[in-house]
Length: 582
Ligand code: AMP
Image (cartoon, rainbow, N blue to C red; front, side, top):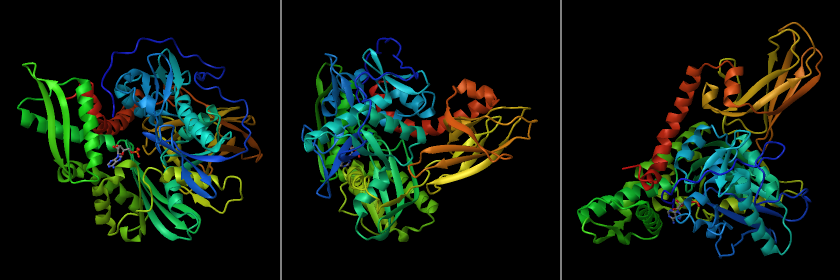
C-alpha cells in the first residue's frame, strides 16, 4: 500500500557522473569481469514483488527470503541511520519514510525523463525523480542520485544473495524476466542492472513466455494457451501456441495502468461511503488515516478471495468535531466486492478479446488458461474467464511463482544446445522519424521475432558524408507520442551530388528483441558504419527534424490524455492520500 504525503525533499547536490555521463553507482560496486560460469538462476523482477528460482536435480524450486517468504518486495529504502534496506525491511519504511523509500522502479527503468509515463509517475510518487545527464529518469535517495539500473541492481543483488545462501556458492549468472511490452532500452537497462549486481544476464525472457514454460515445458503438449497476468500495477494478456518445446507468441496486449491498486482504490471509496452512512460524518482523516483504510481495503480484497464475508475494523480512524475517536467498522461481502470490481475486470476481458482478434483466434481455439499475478486469485477473475472461454483456468500453476519457475527451467538450457524454441513477437511497432515529425513504420507490432526489414535512404545534400536516422517505438503517426530509441548515424559515405548516394538500412531485432542496425551503400554494396549510440535531447530532435511546436504538442497531448485517463484511475487513491483528491 502506498504511503501518505510527506514534507518535500531537501535539495540534494547534483548527481555524480562517470566518464560516460552515467550516474555513478553508490551502493553497488560493479565487478570488473564476470566469469560466465557456474549455476544460472531464474529471477522474476516484479513491479511489486520479485521471486527467485533455480533448478535442483532438474526440478525448478522457489527460494525463500531471510524472512521465510517465497517472494520479496521490490523496494529499497534508506532508514533514519542512513542504512540501505532492501525488500521486507524496506517496505516497512514506506509509511515512515516515504521520500526515502523507492518502489515501482520497474515502471521507470530505461525510460527518458521527459517521457509521458515518467511525467505521470513523477507527480504522484513520493520520492523524487530527476533526470541524469543523458536525460533518463533517475531517483534521489537521501543526498544521492541513483540510476534506476542501480535500484533494480540492488534488488537483483538481494536475489543473487538468496541463491548464494541456498547453494553455498557464488552465483554470477541469471535468466531475468521482463514484461512483454518492455521497449528495447528497458531491456538493455535490465541487463545493465544485472551487471551492476554482479550477475551476467544470460537471457532476458518475456514474463508470459516464462509462465507458459512453467506450465508446458517437456510435457509434449500441442495447445494454444492464454496467459492472463493481473498484478499489483499492470495487466497483460498473451496467447501462445505450445508445440512440444516450441513456444510461439501469437498475440499480446495489456494495460500498464490497471492492477491491484485500482481495485483497492475503489474499495477505499466503498468503505468511506459506508463509514459516512454509519457514523453520520464524512471521513476527514489525514494521509496516515487514509493509508490505514487503503491497507484494510487490500486485506479485505485478499480475504474475500477465500471467504464470503469479512469485517473491516479500523479502530480510532479519526477524531470527530467533539474530539471523540471514531472507528470504521464495515461488514463486507464477496458480493459487495464483486460489484465494485466488475467494471475493472470487464476491462481486462476486453483486452483478452483484442488479443484473440490480433491472434486471429476464437475463444474456442484456446485450450488452456494460465493465471499469473496476485490479483488473479480473485474468484471473479476465474468466473469472467469461464464466461468467455467456457472452461476453467489451470489450477496447476502458482500465480506468484510461475514466472520465476519458468525462468529457472529456461536457465537449464543456457549452457546446452537447447531443445526449447521461443518465438516472441514485437510488442510495439518500430519505425523511423520523417522530416516534420511523421513516423514511418518499419517493423509492425506483433511481428514474430527475430525480424528484420530494410529500406532505402538517400543523401539530401551534395557530398554528404554522414546521415542520421532517428528510431522510435510506438503506435502513433507522430514521433512525439512514441518512445525515442536513439539515432542511427551512417558514416563514411562516398562523395556525390545530392540524391545520388543511396544507402540500404536494415533494422534487425534478434530473438530477445534487441535492436541492431546495418547499412549498405548501393553502388559499392559496401557496408557503411551505422551506430545506434547517439541520443539527442527532445529540443535537439525537434530542431533537426523540423518538427513544428504545434504538431509536437498535439501529439504529446494525445499521448498525455490517453495516459492521464488511465493514470487518473491508477493514482486516484494516492492523490487522495496526498490530500489533493476528493
Ligand atoms: P503481484 O504484482 O503479482 O505480486 O500482485 C500483487 C497484487 O495482487 C496486489 O494488488 C495484491 O493485493 C493482490 N493479491 C495478492 N493476493 C491476492 C488474493 N488472494 N486475492 C486478491 N488479490 C490478491
